[in-house]
Length: 356
Ligand code: NAD
Image (cartoon, rainbow, N blue to C red; front, side):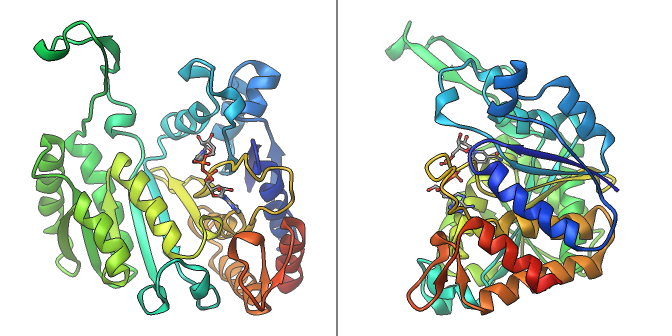
């Protein structure tokens, strides 16, 4: 099992190091090969996704990704900015299905900014389409406005589109996932305003006929944003497009106490996947040894389950995380009175100890 390890920027190398320790503790042989990505790759090779890194990612059975981005690259042209690396990997490897579970561990209920009765026991799954939508749509750019009122002024524009097969394949992934959970899918769109969403909804209704055991509901994205903080436990599987999913999954992250707890998987049609924490490179805390490595460690559990079919090992990693939380160990982002503050490395070591 070959794993491409791409730590990236900011806290990426710190949190990936802890996840690698966990993988090495499992007693299974993983062939881990490391390569630079994002700003770190730009500094070495002049590109955020060098050809060698892309080849390694293509050849590997799975990819463990840290995070990319740093303010110091803000003045680079868009195509050279670190964030292009993750977009490029998703596109080149056809990783179209993003799984973002949002689970509120009982031990962390008090770390959430919402009331315990609203988030306690939360376990929802956001399935976000990753390869389409306004992030990749053409044409896009900055041009001179033709609007009578603003004629000649600079105007930014992007294009939102989804083809029927794109909606179908993400819809199927969501329905299949719901079959293994509580058989509810909520499709989130903006069908009252956008043609793209009207087609999205039409396709979801059509494919739902193949899943009579799964209940399909629809919600406009603005309402979904409200309901996620009002009654998040009403949801089970949420399926949505790239743009809406980006925003809603970060919102869902905060329900769980910290974005530092949320893993994610981005899968292709054959379940080859890129596994990364849901958060970014957190340049504000990079190098301080305080980042929470648990989202990355939990991402390796998703890797074991989805790409390698190693459910028992995945359960072991998740139980080890739960054990260290039950022991009261907390990185700064999830620290509350009465718990024990630990560093990134100490948290990783504790998971390794719980595993072994
Ligand atoms: P961010 O997720 O990096 O940070 C948001 C906040 O959460 C910060 O206060 C940060 O300190 C905190 N945080 C994030 N991860 C944490 C962890 N593991 N432990 C403790 N605290 C944590 O988002 P941002 O600040 O908007 O973006 C920073 C950079 O990351 C930008 O360059 C952005 O483009 C990039 N980014 C990359 C990815 C990716 O690599 N997939 C995703 C999102 C953002």
